[in-house]
Image: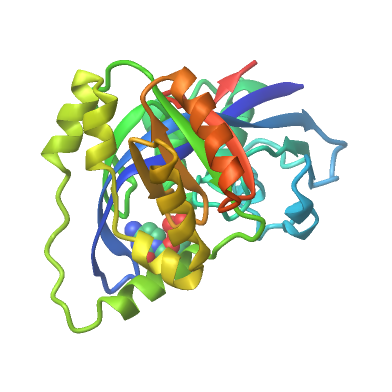
Length: 301
Ligand code: C5P
């Protein structure tokens, strides 16, 4: 049996360019892995049993997750078995803490966790580059979910360059009870920007400097997400949450990825505890959590 802990991510910058002929948008993004984890347990199943996938955790939407080949974790197992010519008889159990359809790459974390777990289970000793090659075939965020830390993503977000980040950043996360569909948020982004020419997206120098100097105040000022107006348009309550966070002492706030999770940056761990208390008393958010970043990628525990 192999147990892997796989982290969620926040996009500190998500700059969205034009949509290509392949339906994907050109991105300049800065990912950071945060200390919110799903646990992926993988065991060999009986010969001929195929993949049995289970989810557990408090999230009421777990029951709606597909457990067949529509699920990214299942697809990751299929792809790995096909490439490495190992049996696809597996029992996979995923304990979910990362929000479902929350913009924190929970599904990608599960897929990356399965790849790492199967590499350990079958002792295939794949190189990081080979694993990233598989990850890229599964989804735009899966390569980052495999590497963790801090990285710049270009192309679909799947072409990664590690980025220098000093120190630890402290976040308060506001979860929503209903997720948002990533394709729907991109579509809404296109609708809102109709008629405006899109420049090629570029990584923010201010943001990179804030990260390399470990300066949370500067980081708070340079957080940017081009999908935020689209997520707020589909879910207007997010606007209230964002302003309530800033009024409650956050030094920066943004919708995480395609949302609807909102990430609020605090100056320190203590400030994050205070922020969570103040923010919850505003009534503008329902469920809150705390996390720090950056953390490493999926690990066998
Ligand atoms: O790559 P992945 O399957 O995770 O992408 C999910 C959806 O998000 C795509 O089908 C597309 O609608 C949107 N997307 C995009 N541009 C990107 C990444 C994702 O439009 N760079």
